[in-house]
Image (cartoon, rainbow, N blue to C red):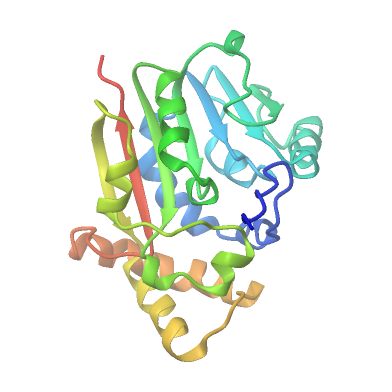
Length: 242
């Protein structure tokens, strides 16, 4: 019997509220992505708007959030109504695949901890690449290292974790790889220790705050020393040639 097809309209994880507290982490990767967040931005898998609030500073001309889960998307609607997000933010309840062609093309397309939830990741990235303007960029964060795959990954609907070579293989043909690096080297050590010894399946709020407030700032220094060759996340920036 074939495995049931995941329901892409309803997100099975509940960790998004936990990771809203990861302000140092969002600032860390955000600093590497913000130079590319200009013009028209498409954020795929926007969830409850945590990444939107962190990265959308109002300097862009348009920011379209795409989220298939209507319950999660309603949080973005609330944040917009309460002016917690810039007025340029809009919402499409659905996926990139059903985004109307009338929306046109974008200067940047964001996938922050999203690609690992999509079974055919290569096809998704090809669709995104087709919606880029020349010179536009796809910006990606994914969890690193399949050997770290845990019950937590399974519980929140991950199909896989990535190495740099693995992510490179699914990037669109013809793209220019601007960045492909590991981030959070110290966090990798902590995750390895959990995998080997603690075997905890789900993080607590206290653990998220400790990681964000203590480990991430140390990783910002350690990552430079290691040449971004170690980490528990992979960051990629790929551009469409002019």
